[in-house]
Length: 572
Image 1 (cartoon, rainbow, N blue to C red):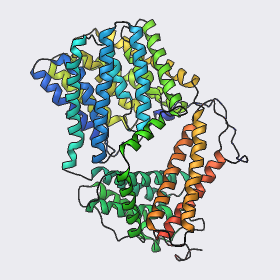
Image 2 (image 1 turned 135 degrees about the horizontal axis):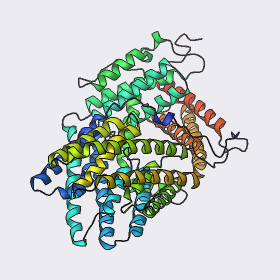
Image 3 (image 1 turned 120 degrees about the vertical axis):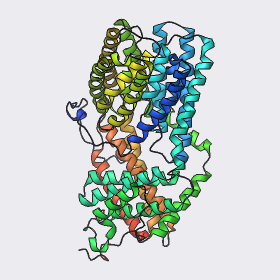
Image 4 (image 1 turned 30 degrees about the horizontal axis):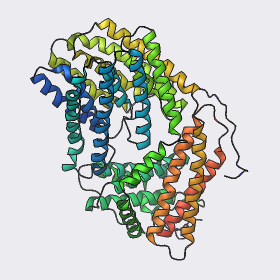
């Protein structure tokens, strides 16, 4: 990086928001999929255990059932592998917890094991980018298992229950492929169309960044979906239209005239998005200019991906966990915060302080500011959730079917509400977690409620304190590396443009590489901006790199024929 880089002076300690983290957002367009999946994956083993009068084993099947929450944003081919990996990871985590619980009764040792597991789960989930709900489910299950009475001889049978429930979860999450094979790709394409329409309606840095990320995500979904089908070909053409609308607005001189660029009509883009989400056929608009070259480049990239081995993927994963990785400070935060929360809870008299560990682990996001937001959301949601638990506990104790019904209801409600705000979903998560304990036998309500409130306050307080004190100075280094990668990707694209007769595959690969680097740059900048104790950040250079990258993306789109130059459109 140049020595002349201008760096913005920022305070080492930043003001933390209070009201903004609690505001409600619009629900996700696919909230019902994980909600229904976890209900089905939980109901099947629960009812089977009810039939044989062994509801005391629900905790072990629940570990596998919660795997149904993962992978819903992935194409089915990739989802099958991802959820299988989640199930295997859950079984491994449960094995470590159950063996530790059977070998020692020392609460101090079990807290240390729980903190180590939480840190490892956080780093692996971030490294693999598995997506929501992230590591918190793993930590919740394995931390609870650490404090469950256990004998070594029981461990294989309990792990078999977890694996069996995990297989059910895998079938539930992958099964819809039989009915709607291209469903995830359709949703990703619809999001790209909506984001492009939002940018055309209100051009600006924020809407452009959102559109770039959505178009990039749509291409990634289509590339990961497997072999092309007629529906996927139609989706690819729609993404080309979204990309053309996005690239058209990047010209500095003036925007493309609507009459000359029908794909830039935001209402038409939104109509295509609605039709793409619906169950009917995918809309088939007239091909945008340069579509054939674009799809040729997509096929070339798809073929190149097939040649990459799993060894390459493992190498990338190991590199993300190697010394110098920006994930290591986050892992250290989780380890220290969870351990301290557990020990403080133990000192406060809580017999099984697993909820303090889970609360602390759930806070750690990409930076201190986001972790503070999550601490507010988690604390409010848990405290309100305890009140809900107190209200429904008498009814849940009227019979085992009532207990099963409440657990299923709160599992569904958690996924229905959590996309609006984390605290809203936590109101349902807390009573569900407490009711699961009832399957092993009734507990004094006052003790359950008191321990949960105390663990919540301790976990949130100690966890956010650890986030503030354990610095992540590598966030600035990650931003600088992202800047270098963006500069190189842009230089590569400029070189491809300068060739006398560049191939469509070369232009497409250059444009996609630049798009990916811009998405990574924005993510790195957002992370570093919310981190404490950072050196000054090169904000001006980030803005300049983004603007130059967007102009180069528009130039590659023009060269490929996706949009017409401003002169040909009559712009002045």
